[in-house]
Length: 134
Image (cartoon, rainbow, N blue to C red; front, side, top):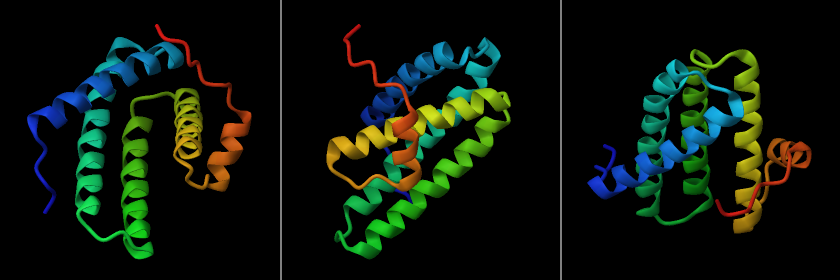
């Protein structure tokens, strides 16, 4: 059974999703209808991702648990991609995946985790991140 999320966790995830959705809307030129349909998909992913991380954080960190968590996260990402593919155009979906994979590669580099070959390749072809404060 998945651990319950606190209201603070849910609020934090809503804030992060709203910020991400605004950036996506600008970058991908999403319509209001696409935004409205994507938001619950992204919220659900955020809630589930937090639950996966919480569940595995309580376990001993072994190669097996790390692999299991990675599998769960990849399955969650694939499910989210399938749902978003019903909302975004093909071009928007391709750009969304490129942006997401580049961000994941930057995050892996930041935390010192090995980049996956696909993520590393995506990061090499991605534009540098905008690190200026707005």
